[in-house]
Image (cartoon, rainbow, N blue to C red; front, side, top):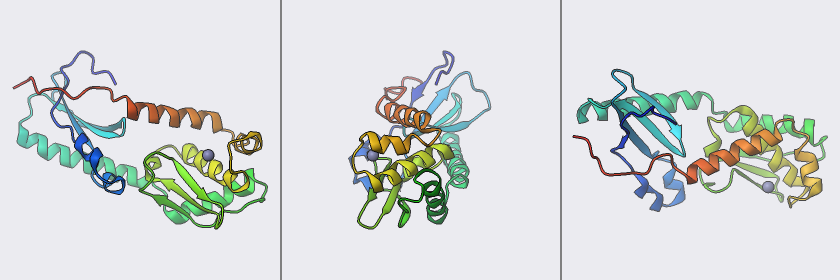
Length: 202
Ligand SMILES: [Zn+2]
């Protein structure tokens, strides 16, 4: 993300939250505030590398910053929630995908979101055909969520990533694109765009 030479200073970095138990990490998002001299009135919030970035004009006071960060994070989360299918919708979608790409050879049991999958995008338990999808996928394009569902469905038939496993997964037309998308997200999470530094302005 380029700020066109504007002064970018990280004033808030809550990476200490990484030390907490994995299920707690989902509850409070990491927030990074970027002050930009180029911005005069606009405030924006977006996700980058697993955290929420709030970009504000450099001249904002700390009180204004607190108010705007709270407002923008809440707004972003509301917007993302609208793109979050419920567990039931996820399960219906999984059945649909199983019919289309597995020829009905396997059907999912329960399909649910999970806050506990920080390293994996999804998992499946062949014993009861249950599938769990990481809440980190929420807000991502529908074809990426579909890919992870197809991937986990294929594991109901093949435990390992062998040729017969990929033969099923690759029937999903967006498989390669979705794999690249998720690799990009994982890479970005490991390579934050800006290192936290001292607050040199003010
Ligand atoms: Zn797999």
